Length: 280
Image 1 (spheres, one colour):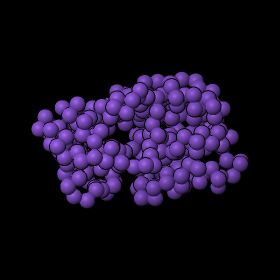
Image 2 (spheres, helix red, strand yellow; image 1 turned 135 degrees about the vertical axis):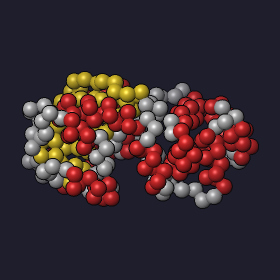
Image 3 (tube, helix red, strand yellow; image 1 turned 180 degrees about the vertical axis):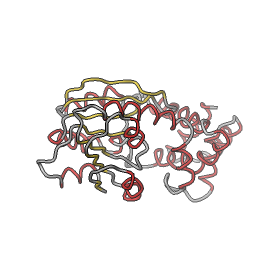
Image 4 (cartoon, rainbow, N blue to C red; image 1 turned 60 degrees about the vertical axis):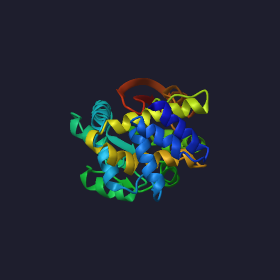
């Protein structure tokens, strides 16, 4: 099944007609092949154009266990008596941040967040303790923040992967002047020797992700995973810049941080999630 889906992905990435390959993968039992075929037969959608599918995706499957592990790990950092000022970069709607604050035995005096989506920030803001909330990208925020502003801990959960590597390295370097410690949670995504290996891995990971959702698998696969996968296969400008956890460590070191620890948190269907903690 995974091999048949990988063949279809190869044809899609080459902008070839993948109808027969998708039909073969679908006949072999692939949920993603069925979802891709349905998306291709109609209007292609952006991955976030089906709110219900995204909501089910983020709140179901392996995500609750993933975010439970992430929030528990963040809580242990947040409750440190030295953390009076906390900054969350790319906080989203607080799926990792809010449970971490609830679990921490001690809450920082101020909690500030940077989140480029004003919609997500509007949902998060009323639930935050004292602090500021900026509807900006990290890069724009760094251009506006005053030199005197400083945080004891900055944290970012699956957000830095959305910034292009050169911009990200520059942003991390500039951020170092404003923080004492930085904690990031990212996926350990492998580097592949060939395009066929990359597509085989994508077929395996997307199919496994869809199957995590049981009866909701068709909704999640059709409304969220398939549009996202098609975007990855066909875009000329990547919107995601994941990398191995060892590369994340090197990037932090290039930016001037001193990595203190890296901890495996959870084996997610997409890739293992890790926490890296570094001193500025």
